[in-house]
Image (cartoon, rainbow, N blue to C red):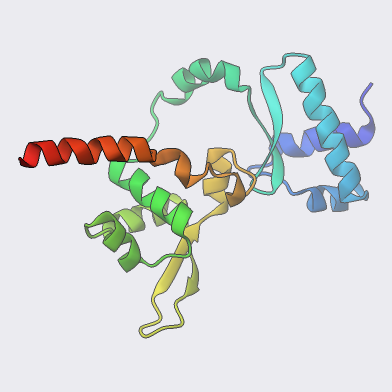
Amino acid sequence: MATEEARAIEAILMVAEEPVEPQLLGQLLEMNPKKVEALCSELAAAYEAEESGFVLVRVAGGYRFQSHPDLAPYVERFVLEGQSPRLSAAALETLAIVAYKQPVSRAQVSAIRGVNADAVMRSLQVRGYVEEVARDPGPGQAVLYGTSRLFLERLGLDSLDDLPALADFVPGPEVMEALEQGLRADAE
């Protein structure tokens, strides 16, 4: 039988719009945040053992319920009905640059992409994925951007440290050598 504290965590997370941090849950339940984390781990394990349709996960520094990854095809069909358009390739590329290079200015993003990124950056700000995080101390004091908590939440990450390593997306030296050899052969 679940304890009152565990049931209270379930009730709070059920109505929360964003992940709830263990410190806040601890304040609400008048208990140590470490005990809250232990209860959340127990709850998550119980849902997994029951093969429930949802899981309790830690994302963006807090806890939330989300659908079980195995059921993604069903959820996608449901969610895609009448949804707003997905991010464009340019927006995804820009978002990746901000995620891996933050804090970064619009000019730096444009330089990396090779095209003006102002409109895409504004779109990402409006959607809440990118936000102003600082000002460059240099001349002009350009606004520096970083990813938001919503970005972490939507990607199911607890922190930026959970992003996959950039090296995972770069071809190895043998592939680069083969490409160079192919280019040299074409030039002759």
